[in-house]
Image (tube, rainbow over all chains, first blue to last red; front, side, top):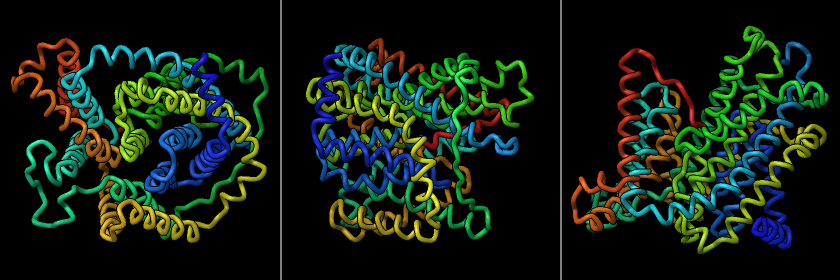
Length: 70
Length: 402
């Protein structure tokens, strides 16, 4: 529980992370809803650019896309 | 559901249950992953990880393609692509044909871009040309609490099915949705009403596929083993940042794990609110014509493929992989199977080499360690069972599209 609170504070305490979180939510939802194109397409396109993010933000973005895109 | 004029309510129930299934799965994931990772640190060495990779490949080969043979060929093609380049252990060149580009191996990012972005565009373009492409329509109307409460058994059952389907390597969310729906039909008192607008069917599949998402993170984070295409891409993200996915992530970057867990928890809750928002605003984005969307995606994919290493040949590799995947998908091969073969092949080869050094080059020593023995035998049984089923005449038609 303490870990969860600490994680939540890190996530929402950092403006960049919040932006990536929201972007992932919307992106996953839109790509998941367009027929024929899945969230995998979005994830594949974003994969090369994750090198510019921190590891935490990058993995967080992918997990958010995964949640909203299925 | 659409024929009954209740499409809105079906979408509403789907959104509600996606959110609920995902949140349950996220909570289960948060409580169990660290425990499994701690156990894995104590019990898992290279031989066990190799055995787990073997088991994962055995499962991955039996799902996803239109027949068992095609499933195996998909996985083996992935394993073959993984061997291209200089061998990490012995330094021998494999499948390089004297080409300098191939010395470093085929990079997985252009390959994945080709498999999932380029081939997807080709397949949709083909549908468009044949006039099968349909623009989406969304409207939303939430079911009443009483209607939702009546479905509580179906929802709970799908959470359990989705969760266990998600943990197993190679099954993933799409198959979880399938299994959730099938079980709902099997348990229903009125199975003949399914497919004609029964809310229970929608709820069962939507809950199950979201319940698989949190579960799929458990083997990824606790063992470093991807179960589907998206988790395989996450292994790629870890590699880009020089982090080895596996139980040590919990020790070396504990904050990363908990930020991810918290993000997944809130993302699942946000699905509920976004589903509502989607019908008001985001729906207009869905009306972007495909002939504008496709070039944009191809352009972004090309930039991405080039950006990784600054090599134009990566773009060629991407399109070659895209064209290959287009034909493979049309003939019933499993693209997620290829990607799992590619990613697991590299992990498997490395751990096998480490394990052999550790076990003084005695292959049978794998069977003297309890966990590696169990996993290897489980893998062999999976293979044997699937071949038995294939020879008994029942084909394996399943999918691991996530």
